[in-house]
Length: 478
Image (cartoon, rainbow, N blue to C red; front, side, top):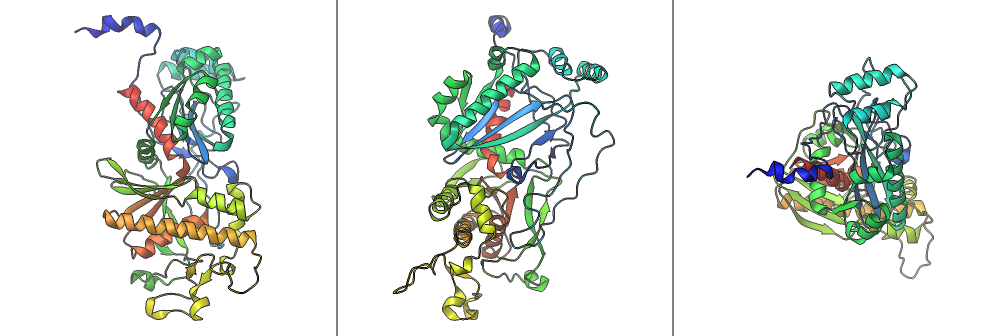
């Protein structure tokens, strides 16, 4: 049957699907603009040349995470890698990170900086380049761009990340609306024409709850994607980005001797776990099977097989929402970042009951150090005594350790049950926070006696939204 002639009339209304593959060669994680964007740095993809006009959003119980791709006639001005997350650990020990990459001789290119925009499907390639070249004062650069277009070698683009509190979901909608309008202006098309090519790929629980809000307010097509499938798709994509994945190596910075580590002797998870050096995977490759522990408002634990098949095998309601909620009640902090900042200044031993508080020393027979937490918040209640006032800083650190240690142990037990050595931690709960990363990593190291490894991602909170973004490309490919 000749389907070409029968479907030809549809081509006037629907752009033809292209075989789109995300080219991650030469991908670079850009410098952070501020401490608040340390877990949402843009990723520059210099070799990805296909136009993309869809926007992905993962709407959870606490946060809405947005991912979109913009084309630019020139690479970013500062593409070098810098340290991941905090420059120092919560205890002041340096976290060693990759050296800044050497700057290519042609970087940065000359000409005014261009912020980039979504690419409307109503424009052909030459029109796209022409409309973008109008933004440059240097005509020679525009001519060069047109020449490159004729050779089908467009400059790459930037994968950009934003997040909003779900309680303020209207701000997320307004941001996307502005992005569409700005992109239309940059490309010299009407907003109506721009919207014809824009899709919202929505995942997470909010994809259902806020479907009408996005669809009716933005006036674009909204597609809802399965949350777990998007998480796994996002994980598989991010693990291909150089220096995206990192872990604590076997080399100690302090606190334990190399002989102890070699003999598999590890102190039990404590308020101040030993600090290990950070190792980045600069030559990434897919690492399956694995366990994905996604820590959002709650926690989902997903087993991923070698062939990419997945199953949610466990979880807990004690996650980021628990920490956020309790600290909102117990401290004056109003944002999650403020709560993490408080914890960095706290001393949990004023709040937690330690082994030393019970035994007066180490419990050597059981391998319990005096500094090990015996009971989280155990010092708050004093029978027959007066209530004591505890500082917001100490409360924050105690609760952070309580939630993190609990998640770490549950993750280990599932990894042990299914015989998995690699455990990826994702979700906005981590937020690149050293104390959280250290606690989770050392909990896995201790309980597994060093046989399992905790892996982290620089864009840990955007797995779902990246997965939804990738899935649309796969749909077009199919």
